[in-house]
Length: 421
Image (cartoon, rainbow, N blue to C red; front, side, top):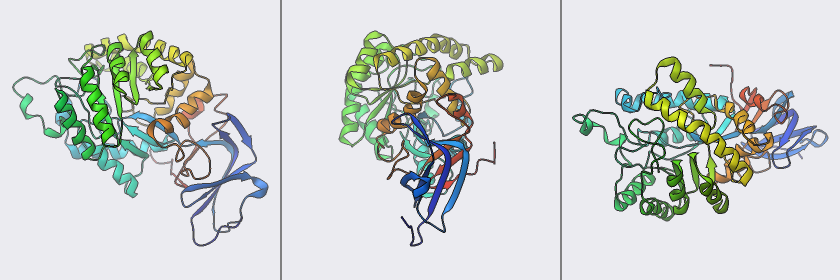
């Protein structure tokens, strides 16, 4: 095969290629990328002739598909552990520019695609997604929710304010607040109409939101059902933040595509997840970060109590879901912890029941299925985006290697990892 005609060609020559479908790590292969897409994966002996190709020699590395995080919050500063009223001290522009930094750090950590599941400043994530796609900003491919669909005073609202200042909260911080079936329908239309790729509903209270209870449902069955129906009419789906068992079950019965967190699930909820094929996206790492930083920096006592109540239960439920065959997609809740630390979660998923290859699949093939990009990302295969990462060694033997990514190729071009590391 000879490639000519002024096309951009890159040839990656690693020590090994990890086939995430078979779980095999193979040597002697070359990955050929043409105009940002994977053209072929061939043996060294049959590699194409492309005199002007960019050659990426990495004989000490194992390459695997660019990773996917299905639960990120790239816009804004990492959470401060004192509720969300402090958002009123920052402008939308400040949040956006923080997002530029966070997107860069996420990409350099090997996550070339993310599903960003909410920003309080509505549609700043849409702008960040579009800037990355246009090449103005360095970052992962993004699918975004535009904001939160939440009830008044709920897990996605700005709480903890004095009653006499409540009315001055900017509209973009409450674009998705809805308290009836009709308001839910209108909020879904606002979010999708503003550029959201999917809808994120806050079905229960939240750990980090003051005044809310993670185990308590915050939308009725009818409200969740209409959110799913309206999203489907607009050609998309709903992801549900849900900690408590009743909220999880209501969301599954409504037809949501994924349950986020799932911390306090019961056996019935696990059975429903398995029966319906609803994805679980469980951030099983960040509870330890909250505990460590909260004790060190005096985070809100309410936040710390709720974190204690959910962390161990979430991990026990995760292990049960692995045994039950629930579809598990990788998602970390980045933004609670510093961006770029996403890879720390792989070891936690293995510790709580997954085999290393299944943890990797959760961030490649399974994640691609969840976000609707099967055939585009998640595999090193012809026709897929030219997104690859490289690690020093065998991630099947040491999953912790995914916290130290040595090579990132996005769209057929190397990403500079030196700055900011």
